[in-house]
Length: 309
Image 1: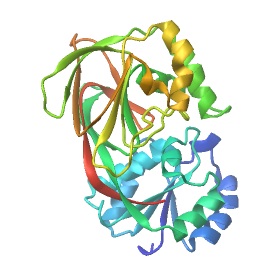
Image 2 (image 1 turned 90 degrees about the horizontal axis):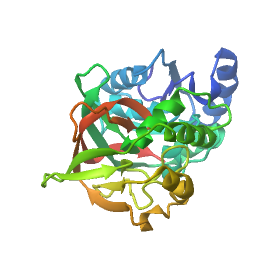
Image 3 (image 1 turned 180 degrees about the horizontal axis):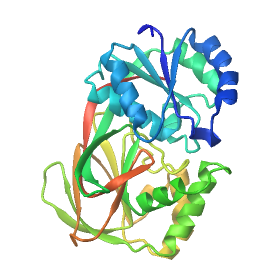
Image 4 (image 1 turned 45 degrees about the horizontal axis):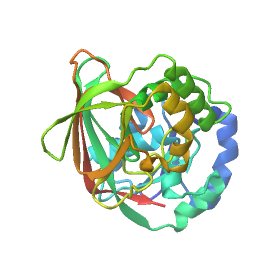
């Protein structure tokens, strides 16, 4: 493989599935837009991280994630783990059901249009989030995120949505998961400490830390977030009732929820969060994936990644 060619890391499970026949039909339009390229298919969860890390270590100049938010998150994680955030550029060919990071990048939705756009674009430096948390096996884990991290109700919804069919699209999948989760979910008491300050007890439905603005298949959870301002936007949704969720969830899609009395918004560089009851399992979500639970530390890494968009 030629390190000067773009490497496209393909998630064959994204966008309803991608077999050899479908891929053969995409290679031509992608090559028309990007020029000569190399490609490799992921074999399972976290494989995109391994492939991107190896590519960056070998000096690959541009690595492109073909898939959804989880795929681009894994590719970014691999590049950063290789210590190549300043040298290896990353780009996104959207094919997932959520498409939330694409919305923040304002990338074209079609693969052909996105390929042409990437070819002409100049890489820009963006911030990245880093989360240290407890994984599902109870061990300490660290992972980067490029879009949004959250914990509480939103993470339970993401876990349910990821386990369901998304044939009708990301928005309907997440909306259906929201309604299903709502029937059994209880708000949680957590300790939260911002930027090394004193920890405070909060009863919350959920909290989100946005580098990007959207999550959950188009919800504008962090409408004021910026990719390159050296901070994360912290949006905390307080002690919502089930009726509150049903009657106010539309406000999150439009981004007008920040005016609600139960919602707070601030910019932070670091957030430490833990359940008040140590045995309570409070799930976390990173770029649409649900890798573990609290306690967790979320922090921003300013100007950590070069992205073509």
